[in-house]
Length: 398
Image (tube, helix red, strand yellow):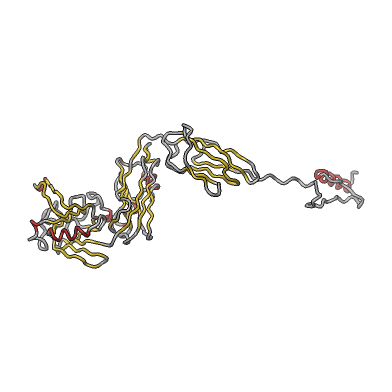
């Protein structure tokens, strides 16, 4: 048939044939539509197979300079891990943890430098399909490794001005990479930031003094981190410490008094003698210093001013420039009246002992009134001499 009606019928036959159906019936040529979904229908296309599992590994397969201390894991979508193993070049299995839902596995130990690690195992999908877990990666081979040291110790208690400091033996080229690996957690919400106070040291301090009783955890996961120029971190360091009571010293070089406050209340008001103001080399610098060390007795020498091995009692260092609060009988007649020292705060031995017993590493010593400001280059803990805006600008990530 060549008319329009016939053409329509041929088209219907073609469609029906593709479905495996009869094209016509006794009702005038209308196509038969199957009763889809019935239990006796054998002409419905089979159900599509389930989606197979997809495995991803980190570092990427074939990576040649992976961090041995970085994230190493395998993860599965549309399925679970059935069996998994990460092996070192000697065939030894690397420790790791399989998640409770069996969808991921994470390495549980640091890897070695310059070694190739190989994945093996398989994952299974919801419909039983299995795919292998394969691949390998090689960790970085450093030109040199760099050690980090931390200034705060585990389970120690520090004063409210205590900075956290990480030191490196050599200058760090990739400061941003290092800073990304540093983390501070506090039990009390505390605004603070990291700042590079030199090429080989990075500090963290709060914007304001710490709140008393704050628990602080420092975690510097630097092992395997790139320091730049082929240098990698040799170790990771961590510490958890506590901030103690709020004690502050006001060292007033003009009133010749040393006032100790705890929680805002004056607990001691001692006569003192500070650095001789007519000699710029002897002036006690103004600014917020931090208690760094305590010694029952300490030997002091300064060739420039012709004294050597002068032993003083109850010495509390508040600057690595040479300033201490300490006892000194020789200046008792000047204490409370005149400044005659070589930069230290002189107290009577009895008063120095009282202060010594109350002092804590990390306490602020706020020197006021002197003609010389605290330098931001001469002092180890000059953190509080830096304005907050300038402090923020010293981060490698800003």
